[in-house]
Amino acid sequence: MRNTKAKPGVARFSVSLDKSLLKDLDGMVAERGYVNRSQAIADMVRAQLVEHRQQLGRGEIAGTITLVYDHHKPHLQAALTGIQHDHHEVIISTLHVHLDHHNCLEVLVVRGAAPVIKKIGDELLATKGVKHGKLTITSTGKDLAG
Image (cartoon, rainbow, N blue to C red; front, side, top):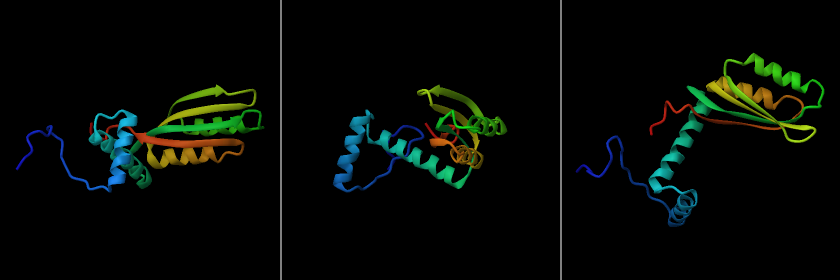
C-alpha cells in the first residue's frame, strides 16, 4: 500500500538504531535546529556521498584549501603563488588575511575534477614553510537532490 503522506519524489525507509544512538541523534537534531530526524539524516547521507565520490575520484567537486604560513619565510610566497598560477583554471577565488606580523591565512576556493583538486591541495599543503592547512571538499550541488 502506498503512503499518501509522502511528498512526490520522496522515498520512505525504515532504520533500526540502538536506543542510545537514537537519543544522541535526537540531541544533535535539536542542537543543530533541524526540523526533524529525516532532515538531519539526509544531510549526513549527502556528506558521506560527497566524501565517497571524492575518494573515488569521480566527478566535479568544489571546496576550499586553507593555508596558514609565515610570509617572511624565504621563497615561500613565490612557491605558493607559482602553484596557484599553474592551476588558475580551477581556482575560483582567493582570500589573503594577515593574522599578525608574521602569519598569514590564505583560503582558495576551488572547483574541478576531484583528482586535480586533491593534487593541488596536497601540493600546497606540502610546500615547505606552510604551518598548517586543510583541503575541505563539497559538492557542486549538481549531483545532489534537494
